[in-house]
Length: 401
Image 1 (cartoon, rainbow, N blue to C red):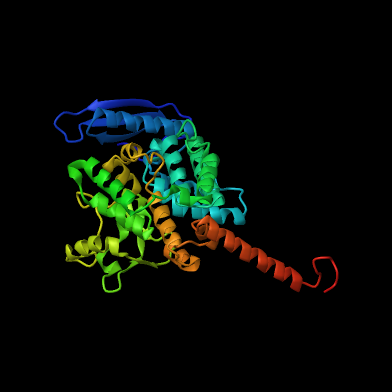
Image 2 (spheres, one colour):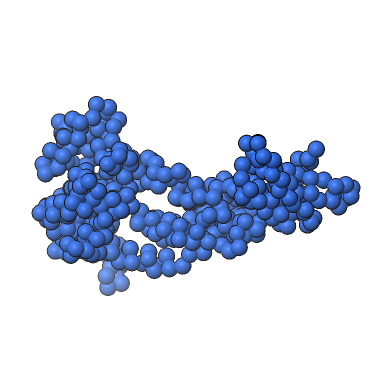
């Protein structure tokens, strides 16, 4: 009878695969070894449907004997593996460092990459995740801490023999972050010019999509006129819209998660109210009337699926369309920049614009103001600073006031 224990570290294994026709699990994989203490001959076996699966099990057992790891770790997904080795991966760190690292793991690594098996995690997948965190306007320190904990977990995978190298050691993200910061210094430059330009874009995306799905055009117009993120548009439900006051309460967003797209709270973790202007009210009214369930989504893909910025890009051949229209640098997130720029130019007060945008900092919102208005704002700030200096105990000439 096979012994259920795993082989000790460092022993030599004798593997074999036996084919037993007529059984559902027709291939029995077995490894045998000599116990270094008792000198008894022991074995462990398991049955599989295919010879490839049987050989993979043998390879895992050989790896376990060589490295001393649990063979089951080889098939673990990143979230499960990381949780099991976190104390090892973060050993030696101070408490003030542990907290942001663990938050980065829980809030960003697991939703973006946790569903991927440890052995299948690639440098490209990590790179795309990092750029996604940057696009979500995470701070530089947040991205750094999130990437650091991922690097440590995957370094443990290397030590465990699950990986030959660490795929989380991505480079260039600091430069990408600097580019994102530079763009946000002048987000007005990323906005579409006017309603006609937006309509032209929407029509072109519909025409290029499979079966010319009209929903893509509705989604693009709605996103631009509400200054919302694509994930927030995907998360809007009929019950979130008040057609009497024409207000939308933003409560959730659709983001990548384990096993696919998931819904979670807004980026700022707070609901906010956004006005629905006349130009998009017919779109909203038509979609609200078309659903019977208040919890139904207003915007879905052609088959009723959730939408992300990547889904919109691929389904509409976005890059090809915007290049042909002369907007080769336009991204899906620039629809949000468009809406905020239009509202700022329409004279929406900056404190109101901040609430509509859901910005945590007023400085972020002020970037959308017209340069002339920004100059006036800066002038007022300078005057306030001057008056505060005059009220201080030491005057501008260094004399006692």
